[in-house]
Image (cartoon, rainbow, N blue to C red; front, side):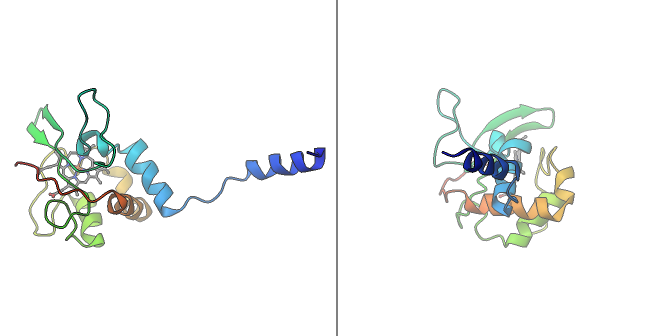
Amino acid sequence: MSIVAAALLAAGETHARAQTYRERGAYLVNAVAVCGNCHTPRDAAGKPIDGKELSGGREFDIAAGHIVGSNITPDRETGVGTWSLGQIVYALRNGKRPDGSTIGPPMPCACSPPWSSERHAFSTRDTCWDSPTSRTTIPS
Ligand code: HEC
């Protein structure tokens, strides 16, 4: 490779590409709010189960009581597949389901401040929507 080509390549790398909504959403969901910590089931070794992202079932005891992460994949029967995209954003920001009931603790969760930004809320919604549809009923 010529020196000029190498310099051009190096220069190109310093210009970060604009993030798409989905890249932004994946970052928020996986790195910032880590929705999967509560919403993605684990195998016996504690590793998130591939293909079951956000399908629910993780259980914890917290100060507010015993909690079980819901299935938030686009499955229409056991997930949030019948919620409109706007309803998912509303739920994230206000902690309410489309029927007006309050989503229990820890939702709207420690992660609510970033969701005051519309871009954050919408990109998160897109990432949930992209997760593999999983028909998993979570006992209440
Ligand atoms: C600390 C654990 C925790 C984290 C982190 C978390 N959740 Fe939850 N979430 C829960 C629990 C537990 C419930 C069920 C509450 C209930 O039963 O009322 C829930 C419920 C929900 C619901 C309502 C589902 C339904 O069918 O009623 C949605 C939507 C949701 N979470 C989305 C998210 C998203 C998106 C993120 C990441 C931005 C996230 N959650 C992060 C624990 C968590």
